[in-house]
Image (tube, helix red, strand yellow):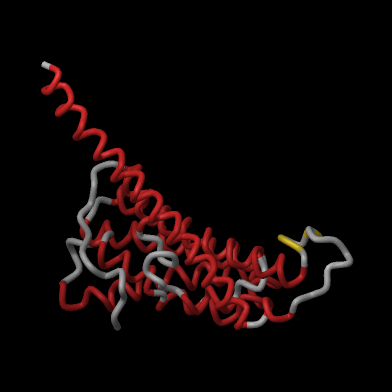
Length: 230
């Protein structure tokens, strides 16, 4: 099994940088295009996306914490099966809780709940981050990655729900006269909406990079100006 986020990362001591990296710069959806199955399968509404993201976030928090705590006791030769076992344990607990207390949502999400076990966004964080960092940093990373994943699911689900049915989280947004657009409820609509979202994210990232370059250039020009004046 190969996961795109399984490469080793250089970790900053700043919790804020870890969170920003996980939530936006290294977002499982926007930057790595991982977890496509739940992203395209359950995001017919913002509510479905939120609860799928929440389940993934809880699995990330639990697995990252446990992997970080036991990382020195797991032989490298069996680390991947061990990580999958840890993730599966948390996913099973989350599934049972949802089945007991949120049975209707559990039926809606269906097979995508157990598929969290093989979500590369989770396994990749266990391998690339939690197995090499402290429990506190691992929890921050899990919170960031899980929140970023949830944000992507809710954003896509909200767009599809608004354009497809004129509602968001069940609230009527575009009025009763809005005609349902079936395309955005079906899988093709998910691909189209995701394409526009990724285009928007790329535009934002380019503008942020250009702004940083401009600030860095201004910072380097200040000492040169001072030396010229002296």
